Length: 200
Length: 200
Image (tube, rainbow over all chains, first blue to last red; front, side, top):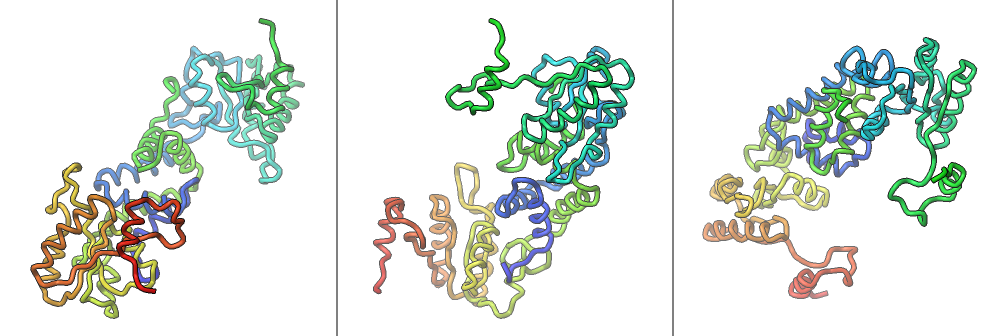
């Protein structure tokens, strides 16, 4: 492409390439798509990016994303404020909300303890969680970090901080996924499923 | 997600979902990525979108994309202006430029004749091509539309307009792709490769 150079197009391709999972070819395709849409559509897109950046911040109670002072869950008076579900990421809140069966509140850590990536407890929103629990209103904290090495370590770390405060700390159940196939379940999951078996 | 609603985030997800090849899950991932980048990075991205839209237009000779009056190929005096290579799309120009062996100029149709999608010859930049050829400077027009039904039909249509003007009209060679495997070549490609065989 040495002889063919259109600066604004290349800048746009570079910007798209920075997005996760978007390679050079896809970035080109997306950039050409942008050239093909109407001026108004392009403006909407550019504004959506800036709006998301300007208007979205952390809920001052649970650290989830919101465009108001409190997130919709913390604002909602019909939610059970005595139970906190601790998750790694705002996307996990969406996943749990989709069950339509969960009525507690959340606390978003925005990461997990990961010494390899240089993330220690201080970079997570653990202080805010301890402050909430310190209020005395909280009866149970459900650790819903991912079932990965880092997620487990983070859950253990936080539970050790909370238990001395007399709080019930629980962990999501491990087991075989509903609709899954025993044949394809890994050994660790299967032994956890046997360990956690329940009366029928 | 009924109970959890962050308007600016949803708007951004919707915008990403409109891009080709981006589904709902990917759009969410991209939107969260945008929230995670710095304010300056977000501004750069938004500006790249608007800049591409404002600054890029068609070269007044070849209809390729450019941010100046003429595209880099048409501006370049060392290019052979007597040969025009007709392509469907600006991306095809990039592909041909990558060969580093092509020294002619281009003409970008911005589409192909496709009655099913309601695209007729008038929606393509064929008039501009005829005007260029009418100058009398052009010796050869190479049809480099894609080897699809629409691409072929467009190549045939344009060649019928150009031949009466006494222009040599050629078509890219069909055959087996270099590095390909005969076993996996389709019948039509193989018979075209046999038809077009050359002395060694």
